[in-house]
Length: 279
Figure (cartoon, rainbow, N blue to C red):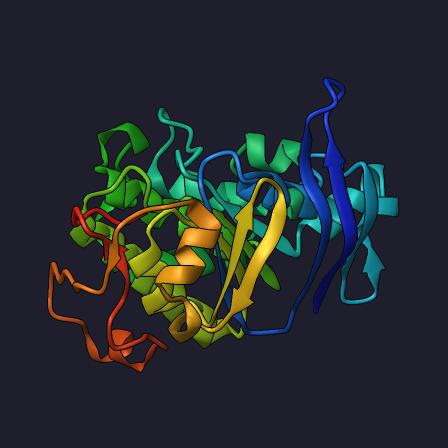
């Protein structure tokens, strides 16, 4: 579905953010990107939807070569690639419903959205999505009245109303407590399965990546140093990705996993730092 070939990103300063990235993401697969800060995880995601321009290489979404697009063609291609942001990227003065419907901007145009004249089908879908993410009661609340977990759920609903084929998720749990982080990752996982969506999730929490992803890709200094199943991520591999650390296999559970979470692929003993904090 998504293929990156020899993708490089070098900044004008000469700093290289990505080096010869080779990745293929099949339809329906949830891939987690892990690695230390500055490894290139966010840059990789943003190169896919061209929020960051790759210096060289090929990025193909199905039959479309994304690196060759511009203007209206690029805007149309971006409809198929919905992004969920770390800091939610909501408009605080708008209601939850209005923020969700803003995900249809690429389809309805500026003036219809400005006048809040969305098609009835879009409004019905927004109601369904708010029900699915657990926020039907909050549709008339302003975004700035929501908790962090609620704001992220609005961001998920806004992404899904685009009817994308690919989700690009940038540190969705960075600002959330452990319990809410698990709930958000479980929700993303379930929605990808329900809608047969592929997803690339940039995440710092190794244990969450192991529990909820089909595949883990480790980046270090802009290069892929690991690409495999969650169960293959051992202490030696984590040392390769992050550097020397005392890794152990203690599991920290903040809540009992639901049936949906237990159905997600997860190793028996997720790796954490010996101090108890996940990287």
